[in-house]
Length: 125
Image (cartoon, rainbow, N blue to C red; front, side, top):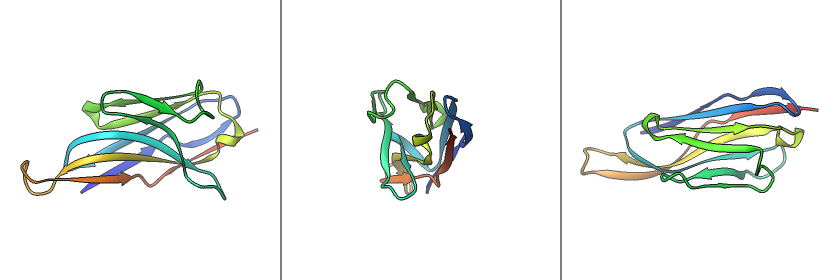
């Protein structure tokens, strides 16, 4: 019903920057909170940054001052600007969204938590 597709990952040297994008598509009525998570090898998935539908943001302490989350509601897209990257930022980054979707008609709505497939960010030292 709803899909999230991430892009923008890749290989970058320490101190460099990357911008991740995540586009939601499908039978979307509205998108509530959106966020970026990451999972490094051998570690649990952790929240990196979140943003509400109204634009309020929160960040993991490890990325505060370096990463910025933003969203374009008209495009159903959330971004993660990552600056001053460190080797410890290496992980698969996942997009997450709470979505109200259209099941049958606009009077028949459902709610889903949707995950993207992940995009790999590798930071070399």
